[in-house]
Amino acid sequence: MTRSFVATSAIALLTLSTVLPAAVGTAETCAASMDRPSIVVVGSLNVDIIVASRPPELHETVVAVEPRARFAMGGKGANQAVAAARLVAGARPVKFVGVFGNDAHAVELEAELRANGVDISMSERAHDLPSGQGFVMLSPDGAASSVVIPGANSRWPTDEAELARRMEAATRGAAVVMLQREIPDRVTLAAARAARERGALVLLDAGGVDDPIPPELLSAVDYVMPNETELERQTNASADTDDLAYAAAEALIKKAGARRERPRVLATLGARGALLVSEEKDGGFSRARFPAAEVPGGKVVDATAAGDAFRAAVAAFLAEDRDAATKKTRAETAGGALVSPRVARAAAAAGALAASRVGAAPSLPSRAAVV
Ligand code: RIB
Image (cartoon, rainbow, N blue to C red):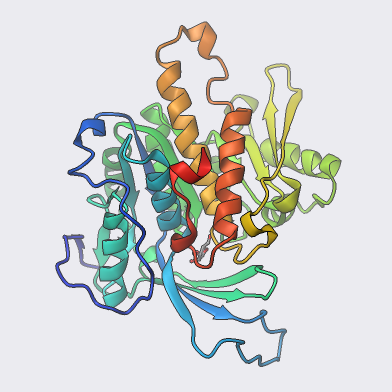
């Protein structure tokens, strides 16, 4: 497959109907913050085709409620990069490492990432596949079900040494690296390993393919962040009550293998808020519980990307904690990467705001709206 680095595009093809929010900063305007440790997102980007309809049952045809579909930028990786950029508000670089397709959508996706101040210089373009697509069925109660067509998200270097070199370059200078499961796990694993070697904090969103997370990937990250469904699928256990959810989180941690390499689990449970489970040195588990934020307007309009907003806020605010931690002694920073109530509050607010608006990228909140 032939690839080339994505170049700035002067052409704007009006294939998408997203309304671009005000840019939060560009590589040029944020020059002063460029030497701050960055947030790097390695993952997917999609054009989302949003259909106002409940998902069909097997063998059923349903007619959408609205006469036309809406289009917006999506993909868990791109959503998280845009959300992080809006939340850091130019205070540090945010990089997106992904693969654009060979279609007109790629031009719009690229433009939207740039307009949000996201550095895409480490991304590539696949010449033989279109950009990823997300078919999002938006139910009247705001619940979203999606089918993702991977497209260019599946095109990464097949040579492992080349992949490792790319990930080393991409994660250099990162405070936090965000990963998901909408690109091949081997790429995500290479990114996690490269990031860890460089001292970055590694966050894995469990969303994407729903097959078991490989133990070597679990043990290469600091946080695994599933939603309730993902937590249940990964552990074959119910997370219906808090006690069950805590037990499932502990089971997920243990799947990583050797104790010293196990991650923390930060699970989102929708209106029930979030919980954090960490393994202690003595083999016991500590638990923390964080409340959900109220959805503005009191109604979920579109849950798409609420999880992306939540996780990007965790990355953005943990990166700040890490900046502060570098000024402290080693003893003071033990557990410095722990999600605090402040981080959890900002993340819950970001998720709730995203759920109050239609679309993935268009719904992602600014820093001012969250703090
Ligand atoms: O997390 C939301 C995203 O999941 C959507 O934007 C869709 O593209 C799927 O990737």
